[in-house]
Amino acid sequence: MRLVTRISVNTLCTLALAGLVACGTDSPKETGPFAGQSGPEVVNKALKKTTGVKSLRMDLDMTTADGRIKAAFASSLGGDCTGTMTMGGEGRMDVVKTGETVYTKFDEALLREQSKGEPKADVDAAVELLAGRWMESKASDPDTKDSIEFCDLKGLLKDFEGNDNVARKKGPTTVAGTPALRLTEKEGKETYTVDVAAEGAPYILRITSRGGEEPMTMNLSDFDVPVVAKKPAAKDIVDLDLEQ
Image (tube, rainbow, N blue to C red; front, side, top):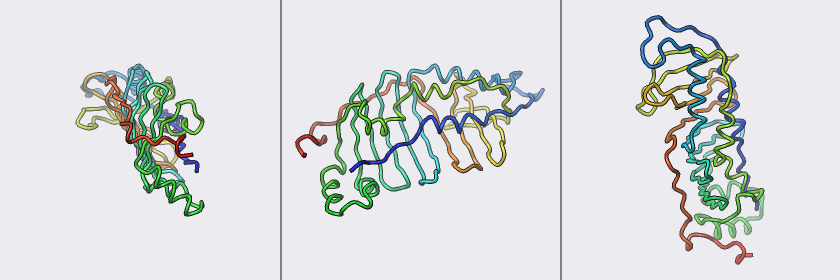
């Protein structure tokens, strides 16, 4: 049985950032840390600050043709990562990555959803063996790579690199209690927004897209907070070699 869990971080970030290409002017009455700065200046400053981190947390809620995807991952450049993902509302996958070792855990609902069409006896056996237990693998294994795309912080930050030349300032907002400046653009039917912290370092706190085929919200937080990824207890890890 092969679990299909692939989702492209590159695609998500491209969709989220490609839309910030509208222009605008500053209000002469504007106050705050971004007063006198153009929309592109704010966005580029935020991009530079955000791509310079060593770790962060990303919470994603996205609707795709295959259903709704929700993910929450804390990732570091050092390789440690922890997170969870649900796909189409059908079950949950948990991930822990420590260096080059990956531990994944699937609940019964996800195992059965991903095994549709296979013999019932095989599915029941897989559920009995794997549901709620951790599986150990190498980060370099082809199937494992599909499960840890959100752990690739270097790749994620690379997609945030760019040189925005025209973004429109829309005014103050808050993200999880933090004051922020909202910038936005409308491209066709799709509207993109990016919220930049207006208190402390100017990190990107939230990116959203609405009106397109795959609406999404991406929240970023815990910048440079160390990621604690611990190997699960031995009793909770299934030894697939012994089960074969």
